Length: 307
Image (cartoon, rainbow, N blue to C red):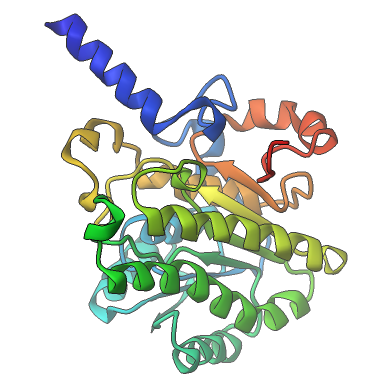
């Protein structure tokens, strides 16, 4: 019986993370941050201001706390729910009492709401080093056959995950690019679902589009020093992932802190060899850096049609 269950787990794991997804691109992978990327060991240059959308809980909140631990001088957190932001702000200040925290409600698919966020950042901080597009939505009816899903859920997923990232990035780019001695980084929270033609159709399509959006940014603004990365945060239990099939539970067990630590690692220095590419938070950073030349020469970690 135990052997049968083990085989079933292995088969499900292979279905969830087939080889072409790059899940095991590095020999070692992690479910929580290894000490070598612990943000508490990082000291970011000052001033250093980051803005994180969808920061009221889960991955966004963990990323905000990671930046506080790394010494960011300013952290801007946004979500649609102010009460969630109040709690995250407390967590940030608990880690870094002198950090200047801006908590602003924002609907990423609203032009007016996004511009209010931009204006708040300009007024209170006057600069922006890193933009983390974390706000996301998962189709609540996505794990069913196409004809059984709800069109409005599909539309909402595409709106938030694609149009929202576009709208926020478009609005913040002038400030990001004009910040003196700024890091000039845009990160889009991606997903392994962008690699496979199963599971939630809307999620897979939206994250595939996000990956390409990041690649476009890296190419279009390369000469202005912009770094752009599509980051798979790992398989993290969040409010969104609660819509996944029940038997996936044991595999959706990565810590949100892993994503936060990896975001800090990606942005603490310029990594042009990774710009425009897909990166997974679970990868071993030493092994990833050891493949630097191969990644560039063979143009790996990008989406291409096999012909």
